[in-house]
Amino acid sequence: MRWLWIDRFVEFESGRRAVAIKNVSLAEEQLDGYLPGFNYMPTSLIVEGLAQTGGLLVGEAGGFRERVVLAKVGKAVFHRTVFPGDQLTYTAELCDIRGDGAIVSGTSRIGSELQAEVELVFAHLDERFGSEILFEPEEFLCMLRSWGLYDVAVTSDGERATPPDHLLEAEARMFLMQPASTPLTDQ
Image (cartoon, rainbow, N blue to C red; front, side):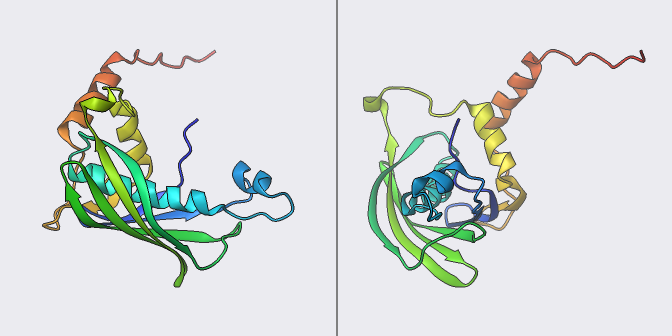
């Protein structure tokens, strides 16, 4: 099971900014068991939600061809606790991107109230770290689609963004390998 800490993108501007939401629910196992009797979302998971939002912003800037990982949390300030029923709005802004990584500034809000401020440093993994694929391309595109990233994504010119060709090709290969479904018959 992969732990995903965002539910949906509501804004995404390539190379600049991403906004995602996370609906916090008591049905999530990590809230119910983290501190019995006091159910709240651990701050580490809020950082991870911001890291997922920012990491996708960094990855998309390179066409999702590089392996992007969170390398360091430069700053993390939390202004209030997050409880079941809250909806977090994560905003990630790309401050700097280079060949070896990127810096992202992020905030988390509940409504208009500032909940957290973070500075995140991401690294691009090169061949020194092996060639292990972090996500199969077709599964990764499926994940991006389920988050609605390409429903809201625009390029820096304001044009609608589309998935990179290499992800679309992997998706097409996956569908070509699927067996045709058997038609239903009356019984």
